Amino acid sequence: MGLKQKLHQLKEKYKGKKMAPAFNALHTFLYLPNETTHGGTHIKAADDLKRTMNTVIIALVPCLIFGMFNAGYQHYLALGEIEASNGFLGSTFWTLDNLWVGITQVLPLVVVSYGVGLAVEFLFAVIKGHEVEEGYLVTGMLVPLIVPVDIPLWMLAVAVVFGVVIGKEVFGGTGMNILNPALTIRAFLFFAYPTWMSGDKVWVHGAVERNEMIAAGQNVDAISGETLLGAYAQNNTLANIDYWDMFWGLIPGSVGETSKFLIIIGALFLIFTKIGSWRIILSTIIGALVMGLIFNGVVEMGWIADTSKFYGLMSVPFWQHLIIGSILFGAVYMATDPVTASQTNKGKWIYGFLIGFISIMIRVFNPAYPEGVFLAILLMNVFAPTIDHYVVQGNVKRRLKRVKVKTA
Image (cartoon, rainbow, N blue to C red):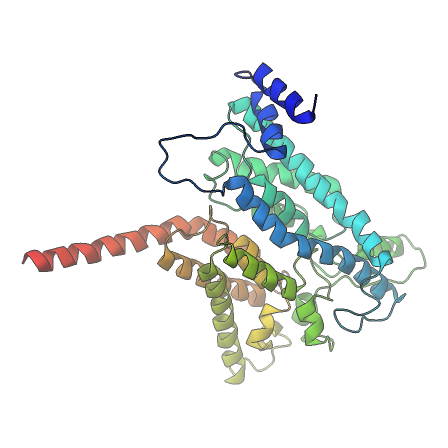
């Protein structure tokens, strides 16, 4: 008897009982559902929630693989054991040593994220007696990509439980939540464990450990684990980092957000498959560029004489904001979440523009945390229903005016 038949027997055996959702989830995850609609439907299509989630995961896999190599590359580069890679295809980047560091550090994050998150999903499905929802499939992949590579696994587990319960289940589950669960997890980590989510010692593997050794009196060299945004906010310089390295992703940062090239490829894939909204992605980028231009204008007009002492990120050329932070990753994979984003076309333009605009504002005005895209998206998640409400009401008023003109 094959696995499919065994799962089907268990599904039938526990049908109507508490554990039925768990067996149904395993069966439909591994195989196509054997219960299909035969008539009475309005629309028949090949896509479903599981296929939609899998499409987003496919778009994230290149960022995950690149992040594994980059984790090892940044580690050995900080130790001085290798020379800087000569471009995206340099010989010191795509090595087994770099990949091994990435595997040992990144894969445990993926395992904990999926293991804990799906366990909570199964628990709530059993308690409530409903089917296990596929919404966490994407969240489970996003979480490891937006955290530092060395974050303790127990912290991640606690944050995942908080994010799934408070960010989604209390609202009724997938499709009902108003906050992006992955961003809720990151926000919890940032406010509960700020020393592990910000600063100049957390973004390169081994930086925290070596600085703890120094504090204990051991004679080892400290290594920097600072992002480019953090360096610029503190020192008003990008330390002569090549712009192409920023674009390709050969810089410190969260696991999956550094390679702008792969993020753009993922964006094109999501737009082509009609999973991600091009309106939200484009408007977020426009909003970020507009805010960057405003700050550049303030500096050029001389309103702030010494930006090294007052919001140094104001002087960053507006276009560089797109390649030295996580604004692109947030715009493509976070802001486009169909559940928490605006639903109307006009609302998507407003929603995305404000995300980009507020992201750069937070980035500049808060040098202690020079990255605002995730906080901006969470803020706009809250206001997305309000934006859609006023867009719909505006359409209703315009139609009523046309009706009055015709009947007059």
